Amino acid sequence: MSVDVERISAVPSLGKRPADSHKGMFGHVLVLAGGRGMAGAAGLVGASALRSGAGLVRVASPSEVAPVVATFEPSYMTYPLPQDGDGLIDFPASAPALNRLIDQADVLAVGPGLGQSSGLAQMVRWIVQEVGVPAVLDADALNNLAEAPGLLATASRPIVVTPHPGEFSRLTGDSIAQIQADREGKAVAFARRSKNLVVVLKGTGTVVTDGRRLFVNPTGNPGMATGGAGDVLTGVIAALMGQGMPAFEAAVLGVHAHGLAGDIARQHSGEVGLIAGDIVDGLADAFEALGALG
Image (cartoon, rainbow, N blue to C red; front, side, top):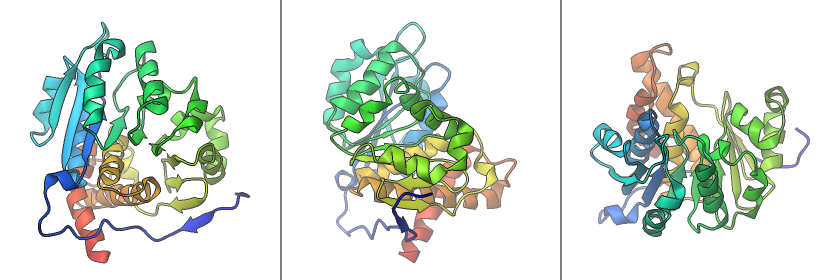
């Protein structure tokens, strides 16, 4: 990579919670995720945000999906949104409720299992251009933005994007082979589109960069190549941002803790049998270990 960046190796710490802590001190995460057949994605984001220390988590999903999401974890709140005929969020009909929900949130986690439609593309563009709350955009949030990735350059508050190479290819127009041949350079170049943008390019040695600094993650294992693992990461990073960490630091700690949770899960499930829920279950021990080191 020929670009000039500061390479980061130290992983930030959340620090110790004060004795008089209450849930209002640790952030309200609003998750916009899930569509017909994809309730699990929304549940994984919500559960991982809780396991990463969020004080409050609300998962907003299409009306037919929300009751299913509620069965996964009693500790987060759910909210049913109007849906279209395909079982996806109907953005025009949902806009009034979304405005109310966003007013209460400290950070948004958007995209896993969301699906793709013209209305959802409109919703993601609205979030990027007009909503004043920091956000983590993953999966279908990025796919719905693929025809207008330049909008990310207009972001007026922190936005973390967490693409895998296929999603990054759709955002950049580069082939997956080109991206994989220069993961650091491609991620840095994209992050430099905006001072408020952080790129988390997932894969072996996940790259985290804000265009000025760069971190390559050493934790994680091949067992994490399983559906839902990225949804878990979305919730982790959003929770850390909700607790007041700056976006780059939250992404670095989130990626590292997520990989460490996967390594802990491998000890119990092995690499072949490891599933995304095992990573959620490993988060508590991962943060405990990182806290002891910090």
